[in-house]
Length: 325
Image: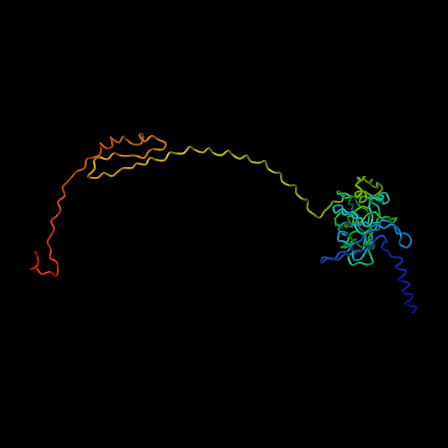
């Protein structure tokens, strides 16, 4: 009994000394349409005594667009942006003051508190704010592992919407995605986040003021947006249109040949003049000689008497010669 009590006491002390997930982070679980998804929403304001206080959450749009979670706060989405991937739940962002949330600065130490997929206890991943993304409002955070000598393994599935807190526990950003980049002097593992201050300014329709970089931090190399992907080649210039040549002129129609019709001479007819079909485009006189000249060259017919040969007498078979005439 004494051993069991000592073991329980040791576990309790170890648990008290270990990192715990911030109460700002709350797990959400969605299920429907044949799929399930996990995520995290972050309380905008710390709860007061007995959890009382002003409600309101911020997360990313690709998590909260799944509807009402089966597990987690049931607050409805008030406004969201799918392109910048931020979402506010249970509160009008016009009631928020962007200055209440710290601006991200390169080199500042942060921690990510959230719930990966099927994780009910939560995870705490330390990191360093690295550089802002060329596409606002996103930022990149270099991730580190809580155990020394072990490289960070990135933000795994279901960690979207997790809370990024600064050293004072103030909410700074929410997690959008993860990325891996081979950059010397880093863990090569990064998280892409949405700063809460910029999300509030965008929701209020105000311009995002540039944030001054921390010059005291160690200079760092720029972070490519997607370094593992080959650069997209520039599109080839569109060639100038080739002029279409003018169509060749259509030649004039050629006149069809003249057709000559010659009537055959008969013995009992006189000389027959030669007739021609009328030429369509040419003068028929240029094609044929005069009809009178043609008839003059025709030889007159020669009439010869035709004397039929005498028929031979024959004797029909089967007739008696006495009956012959």
